[in-house]
Image (cartoon, helix red, strand yellow):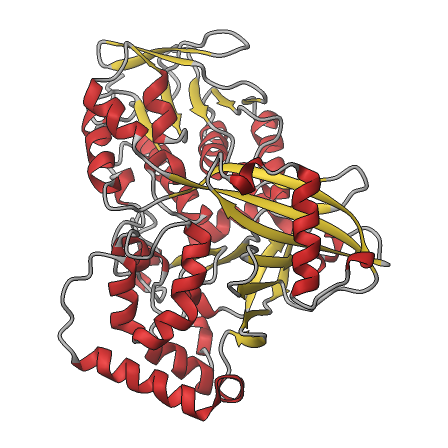
Length: 509
């Protein structure tokens, strides 16, 4: 048999006629890792997925408490105009994929602003004087010399005006990230705020968002009946039905490198000699696991990568839902909560008792700070107090709470991250039969659709001998806003018109 030349970093594909009994090993059971495992198993390849936790899904998992309440960590809206990604979602979920209406608002200065924006609501809440000031600020931003756009503040101010930036981007973004907006790189803003500007937002507010052309203003989305974790659980079942393995509580503890490839992966359940390796490990962790160790400059670069950690405090309350929205964004300086979810509005199956409400208050932290180290009871007290402070529910309504911590949730785009990632990639590129995928695997603030897409492209390279640059998935600042015939004809397009929406783009997260 003549084998196709292997693309850089990636395993060579054959038709399983080589007699090579070694498995492909996928490190990480989140959206990217499971997508890779599923597609490899579907193609008849032997595959083992390693997941360190006792549950698959990563940040996209759904946590279930002992009474059956289900908590979505962050809120996950599935929406896409790309047929390939959409087909994979529906292939897994089938009739368990629900169509759900979007409703969300911004809580700002004691007022609720509809989001997506509505013209009459904006005028009423901001008032004609402030609206005029914001408009003039935007006009000034369009005519003044732009200057550099190195950081988030400069990038957003140039597109929305300084006044709107101050109202809706600065405070919320700094609450989410824990640093000044001048420390966040403009690449993050360009990646997260695709297709939305003062003009496009105003146009949508007054004339509607026809055909969902501005994807950060979508008004409907898909959602698994029992939360996003249901997708990863069903994907796991399908992998195992096709002969693959998903090993829980089985982290990779060492990657032995010999002659430029990973030849052995140590785990608590024994060592594996991989045919090829797909990793979604955070770059910082992956570099630290290799033996012999990476060069000193690579280790230094990896240790310098920064992440923002995340916590959900779920509260179960007596009575009706506190608000009808999927979530509300909290643009208030006097509280530490960043966003509040209403789980029933995502799916009625998330809340088993119709006489109760269940909300999730989302907090952002750095591992080791006062929020992260606060014990669960204190966090529940804080969330209860802030619900009362916001006028949403009095403490006597709260039955109990549940805390979930997610470390390394968001890779940070600070002023040194790009150089650090480039240094690590320069060391990784020569490795054969090995590829990094996913959000933390590439240290890129991708939503889960693009994390899945990076894994799908890696599998294409393995099975079809294609040569996709995995690092290029969703890297461009210019985003393809509308589906085109060319996109449909070329399913390997690196930057498709997709959005897997988690955060409020107008508020910079």
